[in-house]
Length: 89
Image 1: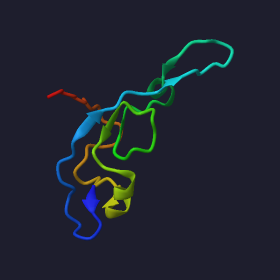
Image 2: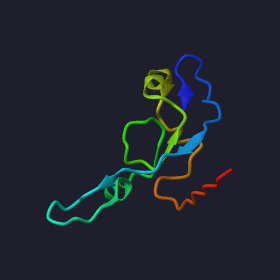
Image 3: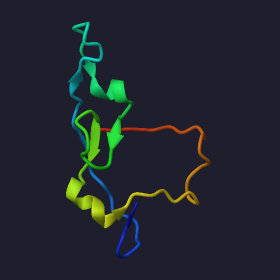
C-alpha cells in the first residue's frame, strides 16, 4: 500500500485480534460458528466487517489516503505457496 500523495509505502501497521461475530449459517439449526469461517475472511486492513478475526489499526476514514493496490513486481506469482506467520507480542 502506498500513500496517494507521496507514493511512498505505508508505514508499519499495528494488528489487533478482534475476534469474529457468531453466525448461524443454517436457520434450520441452532449451530453457531465464527463469521470468518463462513466468509473466509481472516484479516482485513480496514474495519469493513465484524467477521474478520484480525484487523489493522487503520480506520475506515483512512481509506481515501491510501492506494489499496498490490505491486506485482515485488510479490511472488499468483498461486505461489505462501506461509503466514502470526506472532503475539
